[in-house]
Amino acid sequence: MKKLQLLLLALVFTISASAQYTILSAVDIKDGMEDQYLQLEEFFGPVHDLAIERGIQDLQAVFKVVQTNDDGESVADFFIITSLSSKEQLDAYNASWESDAWLDLAIEAHKGKMSKRAVTTRYLNSVGSESESNERRNYHLVGVDQTIWSGGDLKPGDKMSILGTISKSDDFESYESEVYKPLIEKEILKGNHRWWMLSRIYERTENAYGDITHMFFNIGVEGADNTEGWQKMQSSFKGQKLLEGLGAASEHQNGSQLELVSIHN
Image (cartoon, rainbow, N blue to C red; front, top):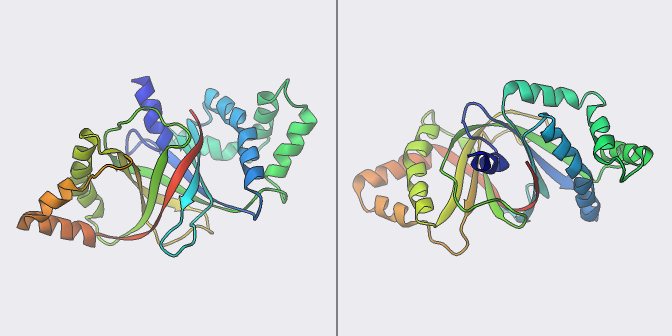
């Protein structure tokens, strides 16, 4: 059971739709700085391990964007997922960045491997003008619904898709839970999909895209066809009407295909 809980946290994002919180950071990297950015994430890996051990956060995962959107422009270069289990933990996590708590964690995490001066310099550069990223846009998410999980542990190289959408109806979340979720969950049970989740954006930084209201997360199975349920629904009048309502309830924006770089939980 503990292993399953860690798997779900690893992606987010939420075991209980009302209890888990996620910070999704869209990261734009400066030209020619990807290797340096990945070295930065490697530096912070042991720091996040220690933070998780101390109960400051539950999970940290880094995904690289490997496929651009329909306009040929990537919505970001990387996405960072930070998972927390309660509002109290979220508030404490945010407050910790306003003090020297993370610098102290970094010094402790790298003790015996790097000098205190080297750790301090690396840490300060990562949050200052010499940072490898141009911009970070943060979205605060709460889970709405998700399917069962299948396919074992997440590992570097695993793919996940992310899709922003704009709710156009008060019934949008109900349509997704009552119409789409059962379809994709059947495909999961047949081995044609691994996981689906819908989350709601309840807060964002000023530089984040303001139109999207929700985000979908999907982990598929390479080469699998998971459209059988759709085809069966389209063969009946009732099914067609349900799918029409589902399609009209939101306006999908451009999505991205992601590849897992690292995960700490």
